[in-house]
Length: 517
Image (cartoon, rainbow, N blue to C red; front, side, top):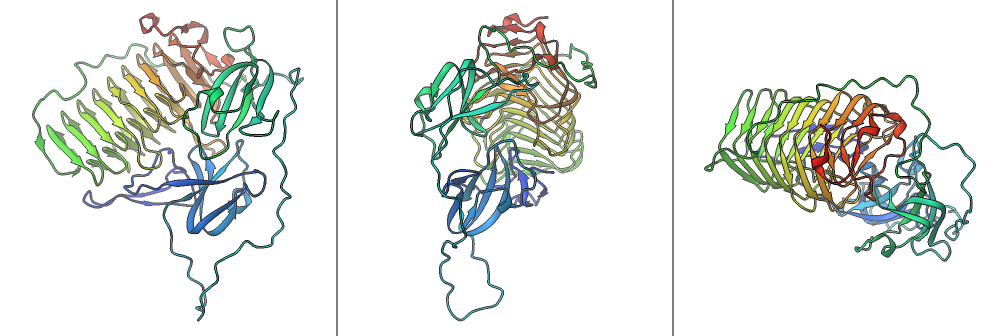
């Protein structure tokens, strides 16, 4: 989902993508890989013993983290699910979890051969904390006497299947309550109390781990909009929107031809024009672009395997993807560490994931410059954000029609400004999002989660609401104005409108015809 993919080696298109992993990686962007790794939840940070110990069959890769941000180690037998065991020196603001891979690894080779078999490792007698029952939160009748924070905070209030009353989240007023684990939350607005269980939150598929409930610091009692919060710092740079009337893309999305020439997978050469072809490749990407000034147009691309149907990576520049049908793959278009890439007037549908971090129709990661315009995005069971920017700047997202179903609870129809908190990276700046329609079922609301300046969302329609808050640790120069936003959506989350320019000009509705002009 560089920190998220630190090394990427592209081989010839006839060979699989090879991915070199460093110890710490953020996998939301996914890897360009054909290997499908499954993960089994085995422990949780700070859980009562033995729930904080991950025990694995044989030798496995164990990952530690949450929401796609993981540190990995090869483990034989067991490992404590803690920062120290995985060499994490900066504590995270959320609970971390441990999962082991489905692939059995060869056991480590001993430094000195021995003539006798090594006995199966058994748990060492290292002292462990005395098991304690799950803490029972004390119901409160008045809010804590603190100044409202500039951004929302969450208070742990209950746990699934805990002894009563620890299975009921109790709070004052009317608040958002989230149920799940980091990166996989269902959120509901409740008054006073709510049972911390699947049924109360409409969860129909039981999870293989224990879920928890937290309530929001923002009291929604009697308010039609979030309460006022601390004004933004004086150093917040003003947002200077780009021109608000981008030229509309012309013609309908999709190929302008009806016949195609079948082709094998293509690794593009500089300046190549790929037009009128039909490519499918179950064993890897259909088109790989690592060079400059390539155009792919009027083609049918899919089904494809690997990390993307079309992979634009490794410093590609000036690439144009236009008027194509891109369908049936792990991910549609991946633009990674490239500049000035245009994705325009394409039809994209059916990307269900299948590799870690996959599942998007269009994904720009660590990109600089580019346009995503006039595309039609459809399909169900998206396993990641349908359209996303990750640490990308100077991007225009305009005139797109997004209407999708999302199966992954923390994913959305559109996201931008996401990055690892505390990483010191740039969540993105000078990004312009306008004239888009974003409809979705499932998942979380579309949103902006960080900005280092001049991030503008205007004249869009978000029928499932939006999220706009400082997840990344940098949230300055954000303008959200003249949009239609479903503020009654249970996924709507804008805790501090004071740090957002133009908020009062938005329209609370699901009727896209009401977008201000």
